[in-house]
Length: 222
Image (cartoon, rainbow, N blue to C red):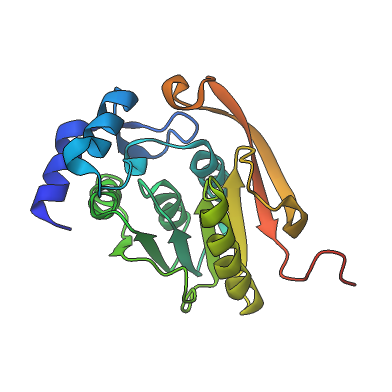
């Protein structure tokens, strides 16, 4: 991680427990809208939104599920796609994953993942890059929180996740009812009422589901 990105994270976010997964502490922004405007303002138009600065509902639900079901990842290689703050990756590492790879397209998010992993005393390999046109490498479990927030992103993510599942990986996503989740491709594992920043979600609690991807086409014989 770059020193500038790490300094930015430390300056604009405070290390605090995650509301729904208090076992994990993250660098989180106290005032969401101000930081959002700072990183998307006139002179920062090429900078991705600061997804790393908040514990989004999908990630919180997925991290809670992994924490409560460590057998999912224990002894396995894990990929956390679009990792954001690294919450899900950290939960997997705490649950005994052999190796955890967290991938992000935002350099500040990569810095946040590294700082957050260090703060929680676990190892996470934070990686900068867009891997959606590739594959999940040697991952045995692929985790993705809150990735179906736009139509274009959903299409790319689904293709990536299907390739991973058809290569033998278990694929789980956490989603709080985003419009572009293709529910017919998934089956439900758990559902939670997750606390969220009201400034971002317009509510204080979001019903959030952990889903597992079925690699077979909808309607195919099992």
